[in-house]
Amino acid sequence: MRLTTKLSLARRIAIGMILASSTSIVSSVGGPAGLETQRSCHAAEEESISDARMTPTVRAIRRASPAVVNIHGQKTVRTTAAGMVGANSQDSFRQVNGMGTGVVVDPRGYVITNYHVVEDVNDIRVTLQDGTNTHADLIASHVRNDLALIKVHTDKPLPTIPRGTSEDLMVGETVIAIGNAFGYYHTCTQGIISALHRDVPVNETQDYVDLIQISAGINPGNSGGPLLNIDGEIIGVNVAVRVGASQIAFTLPIDQVVETVTEMIKQHNAQRVALGIRTDGGPRDGDGVTVTDVTASSPAAREGLKPGDRVVRVGSTKVDDQLDYVLAVLGSEPGESIQIEVQRDGQDMMFALDQSGRLIAKPQTTEELAWSVIGIQAKPMAASSMQQLNRRLGTSYGGGLYITRVRPGSPAAEQSIAPGDILLGIHEWQTARLKDLADILRHPEMQPGPRAKFYIVRRNQTLYGHLQLAAQNGRSTAKR
Image (cartoon, rainbow, N blue to C red; front, side):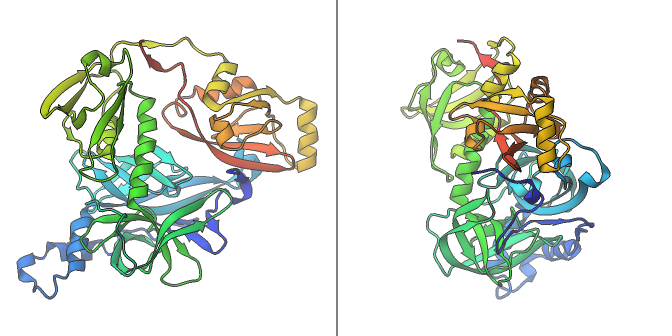
């Protein structure tokens, strides 16, 4: 079951495990500690340094560190059951400061990090390697795999992380971690791969599979940062440390990270653009992207794309793998023409996929919206029933929706929501009436974001989870 009790909402601590991000209710230790030292080191001329000092480790760090960013921000944590469903009493909330790390995977400012680093952070602040402070937006996320993609506000191309593979890793090989450890920007540590294919449980709703175990020092604030091989290539994303143990930490393998991030961007793109093609390709640079299917009457079909075409460029972005492709499409705007270059039978061909011929679907009723976007049928709880529930639980909930049916395969079903559950709220708003639910699903904050927290009562427990909202039929759809 993916629901968890609300009392653990502000904690992502396993029994004996802790995620490698940092959250505190006091100011972060997050001044640019050590930044001037790092700048002065990087300012030294390489030719003035002896070969003995310019070790492979130094070269690896210099190669990768420009693409590592430090992430920090403040979030509001709802500490009481009433706060979790919209109450505004002073003791229902507290402000916490958190920090983490990210890696730039696209020069336009797209950064991969852990989801728990940016979860519920309204203002994501980012410090680049050169000391520039800026902000970022959450683009897409995958809670179960604890990954997120953010877009940094930047007016200049950013250096990108050199990407390796986790396919051929060896126990005993040297690895390097870079991260925002305890707020000390760009802290570098070194160790070895201690073991491969570790499965690590974190809490009731979170477990990691097929992790890399390392001996390099990982501390709070390292979450989302890169694990490098001795060539300075990212081979993993650091995520957790073993509490009470030294030199035991865990990393998500980069091939798993790229696969997950690619899929979540692909789902995000499907809600924004309608090109009408499916593609396939491997997770690494050079694996290529091939068109596997073209939807009839789509922009791709009208322009003449065919299965088997190899995509080599989208707009001005060169495409070497699936992540390149979905990131390139992510940079396009809904409705605009997208230039795609493909190779067919040894020849380069250019296509302009025009999305302008799109229709706005008929607005949905509240019942249709709840069924299509979440996958539930529900009815308001009677006032007397809510009074009995509040007396039983010692709560003061203002109302809820009694769920009578759940659509198989829907976002609600994926989160183990079941008939008989009482939906109390989504995001920061209560769901006392069906109109409340419709207003929430049509709210601008819900439209672009793919995930939303929900709160339910099941028997004598208040639980929470995260919904991967489906695309609404009221949004733009391709003309057929």
